[in-house]
Image 1: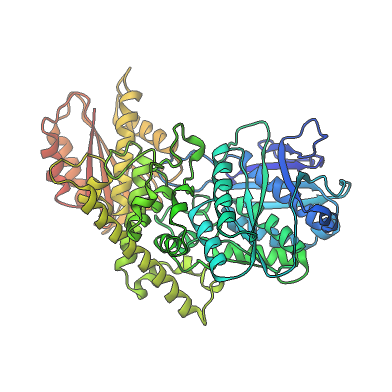
Image 2 (image 1 turned 90 degrees about the horizontal axis):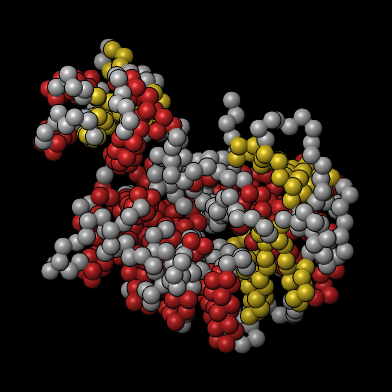
Length: 621
């Protein structure tokens, strides 16, 4: 049974297909200014007179990219708060009227377009049907702002987000070449993002007179808030517009600067897959995009990332070396700027903020970076969000694993991921590619360890108690050394401790089965990563069936209900039996519902069992 959300998008007035499934969501998309149902904003600065010379298939491409981006934001993936960071891939089906349907319906063109989008987004599928009947005046895609092109002399097209990596790439290029740079920015409807980009561009223009041209385009939804903020197709939109400009400049390459650790985005947890793992600047994404754009151009096109072998700390070091230290505080890395209510430009809690702050400490530039731009300081303040805590610990855990793992162990553990990378990085052979990736990851790990040491040295004042729940406390307690099953068990226990008392505040369960029904419902509401009483677990010569079992990690949940007539000793006997019947590689979460407080000494009760084998006792009242 296909459980993926199916979405159909009708673009440029395309008709709805017949016989679509009943549960399919249908959206109509249009950017045309004279369309009363216009719901996509697409504004590109003019290429002056030369815009008339853009091939019609490139005009089609710009529209396709805009519609794919708008559709990505309209089609919701699923709740972020699931028990596991499970992927919610979607089925995305496009029906688009274009100028050159014969070209776009070619099998190799559609296949390369689909392959790039599926890998980039982690979605289940993309499909496209192109129809004739669409035409516009040559400049209808473009607004009134003119964009001058002077193709004489060396030039490069560089994607410019306003973040640290793209800023560092621009400065590195300005310092090491005599090129004129054409910077391409996606100008969202957020005023803060526009200000950031414009402020940095103005500074660059003053530093390198006559060598900076800034090309800012707008694309998004016009009348409604996006249902999905992951924006995995933003790189596709970015890349196609960079390609259109490079075409006018007769260039066969564009540059997308991103540090290699972020680009590769190796899994931090075994369940962080597909749509939850961003691949927007992954080497394979750039390769697949290059292959697709080469079909459109009719000759070889490349998307290059010269920073693929650098860490975030390396980016800070390069900024300092290339006289960009005064611009660091103005560059924005945060993924949640749309949620900020104060003057700070960074939330301080998202993955990007954590990555940036630790890199700044590793590079010794924390004072230049932290100039009042973070609204939260998770290093010394209690972390209120479970998601933030998980993000921080996953990040640190992976980095420390990188720092201590040998090349052989790394290549074995990351075999499936490396298969998607080694063919797309510059190396003499596969083994050299694996070695280069390992060296990058080990360097990143050592940078994070250095950052953690510096944070403790500078922020851990021995005269005061470290706040519970702060990153300092989590570091001191070595929380990042806990295995995946234990972390997941703690997460579930916290969720059940809130949900079970609410569920039974009016009437208690009559029997343990009813309690398991409620636990099953709570787990099910947060994803499909658990099976109730299935599959069975084989141990010795018997088959045992746990109350609940995780599908992605070695975690079992056993439930105990202490009713008025029951005694703690009876529960102890049941737990003792469970401890012996399950193999040691299975971590057990014991959920004990004790509404009448039959257990008087919780900690003693827990420790007696938790000291015997890998397990967690959660007593709920």
